[in-house]
Image 1 (cartoon, rainbow, N blue to C red):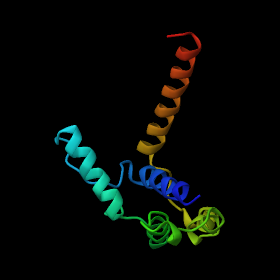
Image 2 (cartoon, one colour):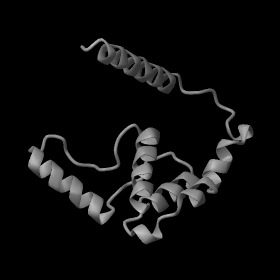
Image 3 (cartoon, rainbow, N blue to C red):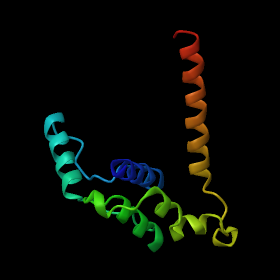
Length: 122
């Protein structure tokens, strides 16, 4: 489903950039904030994060296309060069960013704690 592709593009964007792609001042009243965000979504007014590869820019741009018929299928996404490069260890000569590793570890720990509390009825 093409809406799922768009949603997956938003998730991928958020994972890469650590924020959503809409630039709306957060000091707006909630009703205006929602309208502005909806407007940017409808118009495809999304700026791609700085510092990402051309391949990732291409993939995100395709996934977040306003026209659902222009979005790639899931199979096309998996065949995209950006995913192929993820499996090439020579592409990554840098060590993982410790801030990101710590953030992910903390998020996973928080999820575990929430699950435990939910099981205990808290």
